[in-house]
Length: 606
Image (cartoon, rainbow, N blue to C red; front, side):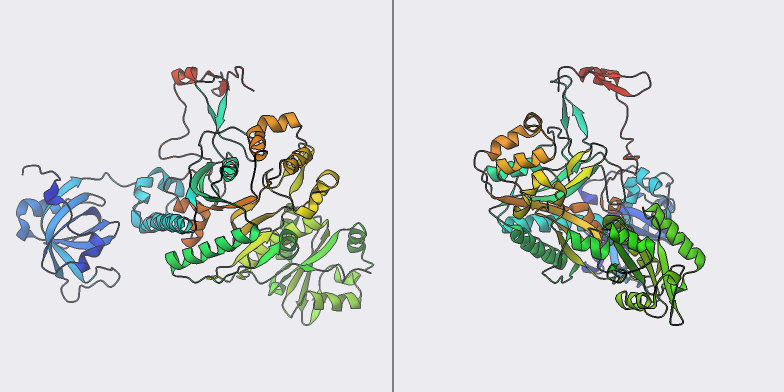
């Protein structure tokens, strides 16, 4: 048979998942991949797939011996163009599990467009395949219905975002991908400059400085769905390159940004998922979040909160508690409904976990047969027994884990145990969308390694007006005008009102131990801009990948990125990162060290 090629004659008339919309008995041309094949002795059935779904195609000897014989040779993921006609399936053969299960296409002719080698894994079983194998053959993994759905939802989220922000008066502006390194956070990805030997660009961790300059330039409302880069250790919700919805507004306060974001989220969930999200979202300060939940991104689907027990033990004779309280520390507890079922080994394992997290000790209590039991009970008075039961709202069958230590340590350890116990006892109320805002983060935190204060978010975040005077005397007490939006225990994004007064900006740089020379060297162009008429401004950046991940009901952002990196920041499909030729290194004034690592000729750069 003469070899035939794809041309306009073989261009599809319908998608595989849409044949129910076509006229019965009308001619049809389908293009797609063979997903399954069955040979029932005289008739060959295949499921032909494209991104819309599958259609059953029937091949029988009436189409001619040569074609029928070739149909018997078809295998999974062969690419075909098929001509035929649509008919209802015979009685008793309807497949209700398929959207097109009431119809089938009777093939009259077809051409094989591309064969497929033996597959490294069965696409239908891909969820049970090692992730690295799927990432190595990502082109196959992308054909899975789940990946098709995830990436199309991602596209829908992007389209809604652009339309929403355009309607709100925002202007989309692209900011540079090759920028100046300003090492005040995560590690930069550095790009050597061929034309300026020894000097480097940095890939942006965020467009922060540029979007502030856009506000100084009078653009009023800016947005960008932008790629950002951070050279940091990876987790399920982190990648070395990621996408964020970045925006900035002038002449606004926190209320303007919070209101805008709540309208955005409400409209997005309605459009993409058909879900109604009530607004306004709850708001709590950072301090309250840590005290109640032990986390600055609390999961409100878990009904249990950390309980303050300082008043219960204010007069206690138990030295492990009284000594901590006398030093200004905290005594707090985590109630665990149903926790009386935990065995001694379980309790020992939980205490070991608490010590891994930084606890010196953890005191367990259990309510069994109406009595409070535990190794510490004998050291407490009857009054303290009763007060503890009342304050922690303990009932029969419950447990309580009590910890005494420095306040932040107690909160962080009990906060992680709260998540552990919620998972163990199925306390997470699935199916809820629990949003909240966390506000008033600390502006600065102490870095033991560098022995100086560093910015919690970035050095352009405005301090609370009433705390500005503390920058010189008590930097750790300064609260910021920062805010994070949290969904189901995941930080969706964060932002702040920025510093628009150059004098305040210099005060913050001084608190960060920056000399004027150092501040000018790193951020001189921003300081110059601030001195030439800067409006009050602020903004927010949402983690686009995380948002899509949650909308798709996935646990990892790798499931909603077309070509993600592994936990080791590698693309195992393409082999990136890779070594390059010496000639390329020579052009960049970079020498290869004898141990195989690279060495840069620093030239005359800073």
